Image (cartoon, rainbow, N blue to C red; front, top):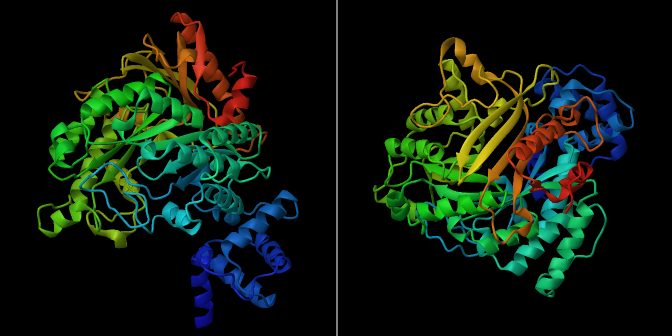
Amino acid sequence: MTIQNKKTKSDTVRYLTKPRSEPCSTTGVIQLVKFLANRNIKNSEDFLKLKQNAAAQLKMPLPDNVSILEIYQKLLKKRKIKKNRFFEKLKKRPVRSLSGIAVISVLTKPFKCPGQCLFCPSEKNLPKSYVSGEPAVERAKYFKFDPYLQVKKRIETLEKLGHPTDKIELIVIGGSWSVLPKRYQTWFIKECFRGANEKKSESESKSKKTLRKLEEGLTREQKRNEKTKHRIIGLTLETRPDLITPPEILMMRKLGATRIEIGVQILNDKILNLNNRGHSLKEIVEATLLLREAGFKICYHLMFGLPFSSFKKDVECFKKVFADSRFRPDMLKLYPCVVIKGSKLFKLWQKKKYIPCSNKILINLLTKIKLMVPPYVRINRVIRDIPATKIEAGSKISNLRETVLKELKKGGLSCQCIRCKEIKNETDLRGFKLVKREYESSRGKEIFLSFENQPRRQRVGAPIPTNMSGSPDVRRGSEASETKNKLVAFLRLRLQNNFPKYFKELKNAALIREVHTYGELTPIGGRKDAAQHQGFGKKLINEAEKIAEKNGFKKMAVISGIGAREYYRKLGYRL
């Protein structure tokens, strides 16, 4: 029994250890999977018991679940077995592909950040603000920050776990992307595309190639990615607002970026200054304007419980995010401030000059925030994957989102953000109707079109009821059900009179900044009954084109991910 426990423990960290001396034979795993697939497995305990018994009868080592899932997928594809309900549940974190895309995060090499923020940890041999133990960080360390291997191996792992990987959202993390040398940026993104492309291509060392040669290589890999199996349909970069400039925006588009995440933290100049952020609201406003005018999707990183802030100031900040038209991002990542060794904040905490907010206050704050979020916003995160062992003080609740949603449910309330309304794995797509919402942002008009199954009792295009904060009003009782509608697809359309002079292509053009259909990720050319093949995207684009034409625009521009270019070409768009 002791030996068995050791093997099980080994399975949990298998990717960090050497192969076992007695690897499971493929034939043995095939026999085991065929046996298990024909059983009515009730739960994890039942599965483990059946797996152990089958392995004992076959006189083979106990295979890990990744190996079992890999064989299960192959046998299912060859129709050697039928789909098993429990095996489908074995897919780890199915939410990864229920948002319609497979998300892959890659980490850049350690590089000095110009920021001196109080709360930012600085761990040796890691990019600033990142710590050992975070899943993406551990993968990057294992592959020595090689972008090609990070992408390639992550795709392989997701496929073994049964996730389709045809449509990939690539997120490049590592802090302030914009301070990295342009040659490294070009090489890094080129290698990411190379990792996604099926065709073998020669690796090019960044140190031996000129920027021009690297750019040629990037263009080549991007062209391949337009029609390959694993298409990068979205590329996200994260940086500081004070580093966003017209030349930087041009560079980001050249790389294929479609979404930019900026560290805003809080909309209060005094608190930003006291936390050594090195920028003010002015830079946040300017960065938001530049990014929006160029068609990028914008995600704000906001942090609560910062030194010198308070519950009241945090609530005021969030109200301002959506009440003030200079801001109004498309997405949010919310983080509670925590104390980590290696940060300047750690020393303040040791001297008892900083006390992080309690879990009770944090949950109360996030509950209020959830009720303020407009329906055109997606809250991507409410906490980071920082291991609890790394947190010296502050919240260690790993399921903070679920905890907050439970609190809302107790009061008969719900969050209106896009993530909370996604259809996920629902297959009944009847009753979804077009809903139109308009709002002003960064000197332009934003139109949010969506297909929802319970549209609000207002005429299409009517203003959304708002409270004093400028955010949608959420009511209790009989009208609370209106906030529980499901969303299957949406489009972001921007109409503006000011056009970036450095982008001639955007002159006099309406901008489609995002088109997204939710539901389980369906392979390109896959099931026609799936949400992603119901034509919601095309209907939204047609509606957007009508609106643009009605408003006097003669041209439509789309900020397309490299892997989505073919989709738009079929709709008549061209580079």
